[in-house]
Amino acid sequence: MIDNEAVNVPSHRLLEITRKIVAAGGSSDREALVVADHLVQANLSGHDSHGVGMLPTYVHALEAKLLIPNQSPTVTSDQGGIMMLDGQRGYGQSVGRQAMEQAIGRCQENGVVLMTLRNSHHLGRIGTYGEQAIAAGLCSMHFVNVVDHPPFVAPYRGSDARFSTNPICLAMPGTTNQPPVLLDMATSRIAFGKARVAHNKGVDVPEGSLIDDQGHPTNDPGVMFKQPPGALRPFGEHKGYGLALFGELFGGLLSGGNTVQPGNERKGSIINNMLTVIFDPSRLIDAGAFGAELEAVVEYFKGSPPVHDDEPVLVPGDPERISRSAREEIVPVDLESWEQILTAAEKLGLDREELAP
Image 1 (cartoon, one colour):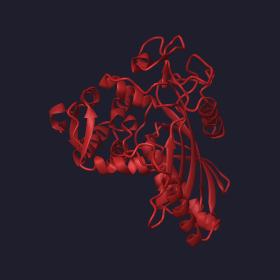
Image 2 (cartoon, rainbow, N blue to C red):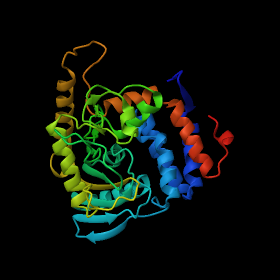
Image 3 (cartoon, rainbow, N blue to C red):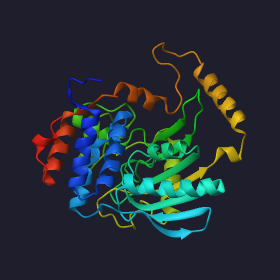
């Protein structure tokens, strides 16, 4: 998909460029590939907010020694069906993957597991971990909070930021005829990264997404990058705010990774804490009945006549599949984000000429 106002990078080349940058920051070849693949897959899935545009933020954290390469999660508590892990400030894409591998293995033994992961650097697109569960034939639920930096999102009826985007992900395997169903969403109306991308592109964000530092509605993403800053708004008013609060309570409080309240130290990076429940649907329902009912309910929902002919009813997971099809070969990266990526790469000793698309 060619964008005339962006750098259009072949997807395989973007993966290689990203891998080089992560490796230059001290990651092993394996970790660099895991992180790079996660970021590029986020772009391919249409979530540029969680894609390669995060690299400058990661380089800043590396320089401040707030992101530590080549970490593995340590077990802080193992009670069989409950596992508690610590990410050691490692790359979230790597320690998150490892934590899920451990939890999936336990779930395959017991049928269900509750896993917490605390003190992980930015986990990236949380849907990736739902996809890990799906690949193993399992269902999963993920509640995440975000700490270690000032908040971005205002509570319902509030006028300043008090928490972050606190994503939630729900994942269910598909069948031969029906792709998996995967809901991956921020509890803010838009992710902070989407405001960053819009700001870099010089475009407005959707109406109702932001307030300025006086609490007034605005469509200008620039308010998030001024002092004093504005704030994102929760989706669904009190409903999104309530879910965000449980991101703090489940993801932060119960993991032991802390919540966003200001009594906890903020060092200036992105730390995620996550509570995950993984379970085997075959322990609950016959596989044939599962598949038949899943296909029937999705067909029923998607059979609703669309309000606009060119906008058919979708189910969670469809937008990502559509984006992957459109971006299979070419990934557009806005010009400002690309320049920021090259500048970050130079800080790690790379030559920007070697990173040409």
